[in-house]
Length: 135
Image (cartoon, rainbow, N blue to C red; front, side):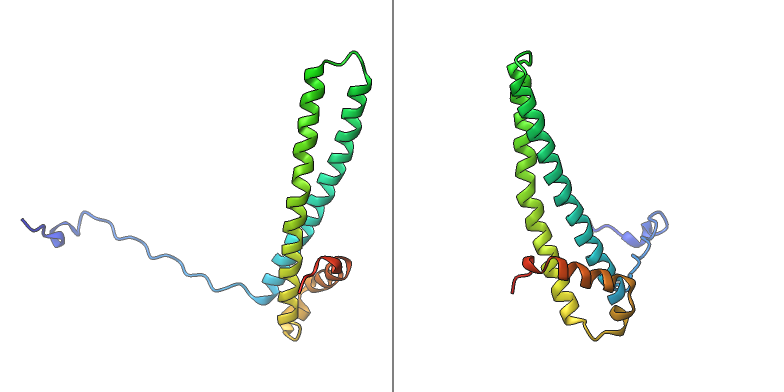
């Protein structure tokens, strides 16, 4: 038997329509891409610093005969995990730098981008990390 759905229309609430947002402006896109690069620069620096601290800690634990071998092993595992994060963070930084470079290259004459306060930061980051830009 066929179901008469019109009969139930009073019972079923109508679904609200989804809001359609306008695409972000070029200035906002510049700001977001610049913020991503800044965050990844901090992340790489953090992992590098943490690795150096963990190396010193593990060495200190190895030099101390009172330390349990299990503790040294676990500290070494933490060190290895931190070391594994550096290449991934550097890869993501390189991708973000290339993305920012492409964006700035494509929008170098756009007034919105030129007036954006993040544009100066973007240019400074691109100059500083020019070695990560790939063609």
